[in-house]
Length: 621
Image (cartoon, rainbow, N blue to C red):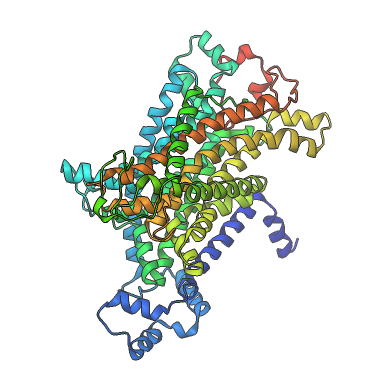
């Protein structure tokens, strides 16, 4: 066999295709970052001059000297080639602004961000345990509205409130900088609380179907301890969720830019943001490379852990997946949330969001101004109502695009695994800067930036479910009796994957709105005087201590929207499951549509044995 034939044969394997996809996406991301000075349309020499010395006059001689010193005349491709050749030697280049080596700055920023990520992940896991414990104790699920509301809290608003309460009012903890462990407490809380709400909701949403399985009843009848049953149930639902944990960890590192800005934390995200603003290309490329490498490592570890949890069942078509049973909240919950949200929006639409009254600045809520006024005397209720269409509508459109892309990539696991690791590791603010450089800041550019990076969690979830559904014992039997691939795809695989991923997408809807808000907070989204919710949060942050209602109004609206989305999703999914018809599995369990909540499995040996023997065995091998 020739060398070319061997290479082609190797490239056909799933692992090789995923590796090639990762390398291609990594090269594309770094090349795009390297084009930032030319995408922006601004003279990079002028930007670097201003970053080096704001007082120096921008004469043609000074600009020419900088162009010659940086080699800007050679063009972007030459600079990118020089940087790549230095990278092969372990050299990340020299900062255009400070003139120092980039590598020490990147390593220092990454160390800070990893420490902060570890602390924030600890907070997130603690909150996850608090949200999941009632489900394990009661043996039944919850609607998850509270967890969704936690996930919808803006990190930068939590950071500001934590700084004011814990640092200024109580004086318990430092408010800025990075010197010792006490400096990471407040930023970790701001980052960990929303992440814990998201992870807790995902795990708690997967558990009810598993806890209703036959083996749980048999184990309890045999006297198996509750702790062992809980551990087995958790292990049963974890495989498709492991990639989500990895993505959340990476997001806590690269997506903490706003929190790092609030607390003046010298992390890798803040380093990348400063480099992007000053067009310090080598430092920006080094920071982005560090984040992308972290994303690749986290993705590889998540895949390894998932395969370890699944064991041989994934390979031997020994998976048995439970039917989805999303828990419905009491009808009063979505009705109350919907009434509150729609009332505020409708009432606000009847008022003028742009009327400025400087004599009514920062007024507390009253009958004239039900939600108070902002720093210019504008009606907060009016701005909240008029900003709902742009905020919620844009977030919904981005969420729908992400869902469709995720479902498509779910059937291409090699492509999904490679590209999602890269896209998830890119900080939204860096993508926002790149898009804003090409298209200018605004709502459309922010939506495009968020759409480019919001699909990886959904794609990873879809790919995991597709892989496990295809390896299930039920589909193995369907193939044996002659079912066509189209029948299996449309009647079993798609219904099994679409419902849980769509529910996951609804859970991500407030997060997408928050990403849009974060870009608005950093000046990359909607521009004043637009009443977009992220811009409202940004404008009110400066006076949140004196007029907290101006910041709390959009934050509470986002939380209510999250609770409403999750509670309605449970009703929609259950109704779809009941009305969608049934396809008998022929198995003892008699599942209808073979829908899955988040995937789980039993080994082939366990599937072949009777339920009496199953009671003495672990549900996961």
